[in-house]
Length: 223
Image (cartoon, rainbow, N blue to C red; front, top):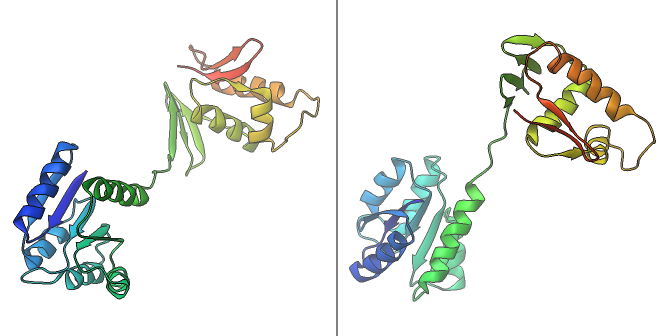
């Protein structure tokens, strides 16, 4: 992670910087609140660690200014001011966490990791591929080698399920639950029928087979 520490006590700052860098993080350090605010606004940081009592601009004002400027990078206050009202004030100013000095470095490290995880949202895939097969989930189109493939809604859902689990066997039961929303076996060949139709469109006109039957197990897409 890339971290920004805004702390004016040189001993505390050196201790934190050393520990975080040993964990493999990139750490920038500034001791002036106004300089820290400008640096934080430049972007690119995963977490800010901010002391409350800073020269130039105090930590509360610094974080308030960032939030007013729509800078949403998580900020943890690290300060000797530890009353309940002080912690509430820090959180209301836009802080995401509040750690009181003296502190254990392990706790600081853990809190930084938690803040970073909270703000790391997985990016939803909008395009799925397998070899020269391409499925665009937004446009609802499927092509193979640039050739459009026209799929019915259930065929599209079946192919999407298999593509999202590329290389992994999907049993008949898994497919019934995921594609047909059936939690029981209706004793029909609906899965086999749709896989056959899908193969006729996705595999048959092309040289290489992508949809494979795993005997006694199920189906998978393998390039």
